[in-house]
Image (cartoon, rainbow, N blue to C red; front, side, top):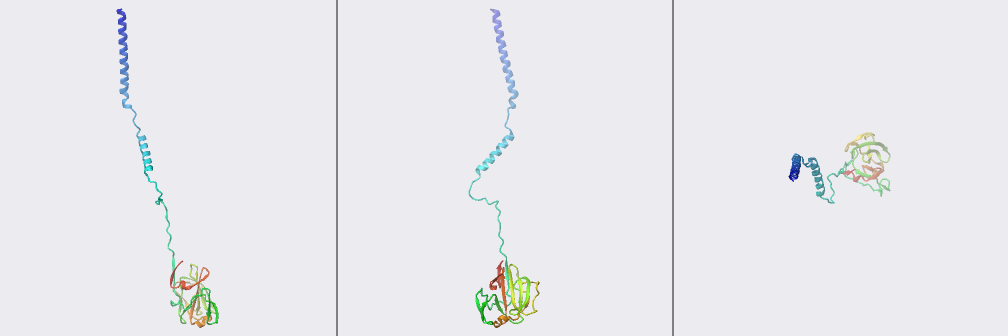
Length: 220
């Protein structure tokens, strides 16, 4: 009986030691690993914050129907250019352009269109260019006296009729506004209207009234 009790005591002691040893081992393992608890990855935290910020910006950006014109390119229209046309002689028209209507010609005693304007003067008065241009033709005409044709650019061509022979500029000459191009003579077909310059103007090949241009600044 005594031997049995001793064996029992030994088993209890062994069991207790085993439990104690196991507990000590677990406690030691816990102590050695408590500083190695994983922490949040800083890089992951930064990414999460950045993403959140982007989403917050998108969510908080107001949505309206107003067009955002910060990146709209705009074009400005240039102001139209204009050209001034001076009177070639004096500043008064004695007979107007008839706009295709028939008028009485005192010299021929018949009715015909008057395709230009007349400006009265005296023999020998200087005739000046109404604008810058180039002389394209000079001709002597039995009805109109000496005729000078000038291309004034922008589709404008002018014929100066009733100049004195051999008093004019030459074909191909370049002239400036108010530059003398000849002297005033006679117009046989309009002799009874007195000494005057007969001026005709064409715009893009069509007759126009010189009164719409002379002494004015005209858009081109």
